[in-house]
Length: 461
Image (cartoon, rainbow, N blue to C red; front, side):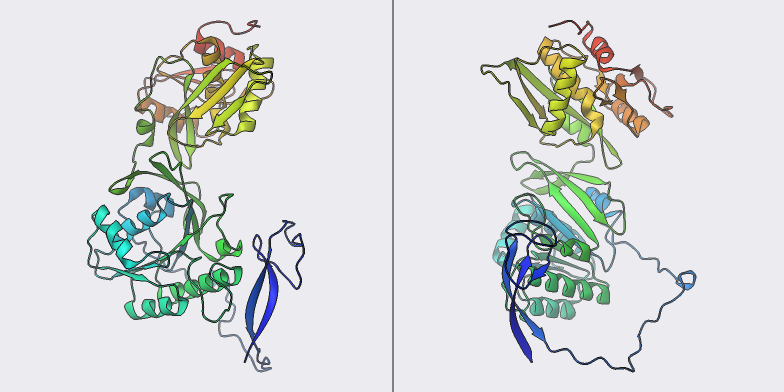
């Protein structure tokens, strides 16, 4: 017999409470407790003669099975996954609405459906006709790709048992529900039960399953936090909807590195991988424009050259504006203060606008020097040399601090035609730098401005 009861579940951490309160006692978040109706079954008394089916084993005697990854035609996706799809793994893919999650996984499903074993694509939000229209637009006509529109967990598990596919895609985990629970789809209990059931069938039949997850207004995956603990990998598809480029980041991966990033371009034919993103982001750069600087950042293990633009203009108000697009606003305020205090630039009456070209977002401190050079170039209306890149973190005293993977960054800059690079003077020993790169070591931000702008920047008040 099943019993029905009401409890209040926190939408942030998944903790439950017997009565509603304004603040969750577990995580401290406000207004996150939601009334949820759950059904519980009477538990049988535990048998005293119970014995474990899988007894503990010494670690030295356990034989680790060598699994064979499923190859993926999309190289950028394979990079993020760690080289391919691990059989029996469960991967959660999140991102903003319309960013391209369904398109990317539909392309991957069609490519893998060319083998002998079929691929099952389950959609809980679209009809099979809508998926067919998208497949026709993308030019996907593989007969091994099976599509079904279903929201019942029991029916989805039955389809998997019957078809025995090589890959399953569920779009989305918040749309499906189990008939054993009376709560609506997308609730904390439904998401936990459905994800756990899909995880069990994935491990039992060695079938990889990709789950698409909704995100909240803050960008986090909707539902309980335990959802990210259940799955084997969590991927985020990022990007500006008004730009064509998308970044696929891995924040959790039990079978690979979490530092890899894949770059895609959204086109009418679907998601196309960008094998050389640095060249693409610099294609429309104006070399002799004031306020433009080139930074070399690390996206995972890949060096990436991006253009940082800055514009400084005299303010019309008493308080100057500071606007940042693609960089942290607090980092911009810090660099403006260092330029004013340590380099003597007059910025107290200047509106400063900063933009990272291509819709990218940079959080690495190694782009501090390039950002500071772009601001100083715009203030003094002096363009930086077209073959110059800047690498370094700026401290509060105006000193330049070293960054990691310096040799890899310099080699990437040489490939794209840059021949001079400003680096911190306290840099470690640089090995295997390609010929043609003039490495200029500077100790402070004023010295870097003197070299980059070709003039003294102190005393300009």
